[in-house]
Length: 330
Image (cartoon, rainbow, N blue to C red; front, side, top):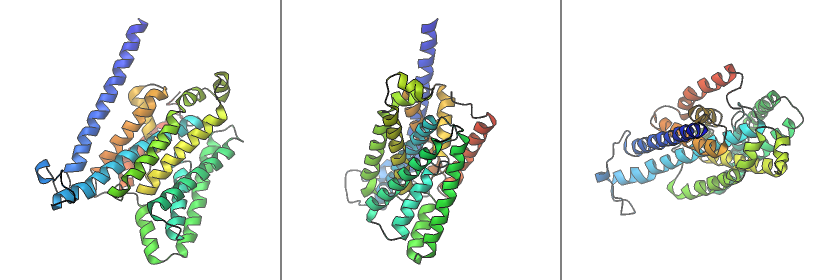
């Protein structure tokens, strides 16, 4: 009987992953070949660079970077959100709600508006440092209170405070710097360039590696830090690795794509609803795949602001979490 139950669970997990991979394949094809200018394989010069046709330029310089940005952002924000919800044991925690994305935005604002910019390396570094700083600030405050609601309040206050700082930077900025920052702040998957893909990929891989090394800790800490210590785990090191990994992922995505709303908070719950498991060995890749699906789906509405599309999915999920009393993931 137990064996049959395990087989049913394994089958459901395999079907879930198969469904997500199939959706990603379809959405990737649509992202690359559909749009204002329809493309086909016969239009492309896949073997020759530089490009010898307008269609090849559209494909390699616009469509491929947009696809990569959507994939990496979906992975980064959803996995960061899952790890933070687990660490704080709060279903409403996430890079956007906790102010981590705001911290990354402040770093980018300092880089773009204050003039401390050295290409994408400067923006990426500023975004990552800002995200990490806000994460440790929220963690330090949360450690002094047992009520997890305080965590959300702190994140909200930090977000307002950072908005005030950014407003002060805007006042003293020149028109060109302000235009660049406002354009960045709207959020878009179409800002990544082909030359910078490897930076995005490397930063994402480093953040994922930190979280993959912390899977055992995340599985244990769902039942409390005392339980994790009872298993012989180093709780302090586990927290730091999760915070660093989540902050690096959120900061990198924010640096390249701007503030992207609701992916980090909503996708982990979508993954749980699909797979019905609290095991992070399943939830982590499931969240990554769900995040890719959501971001690629948003790419199909290029004429609509990115965060508007994502809010149509994210807001109902967050409301459902609140109505259920935060009891989705146990």
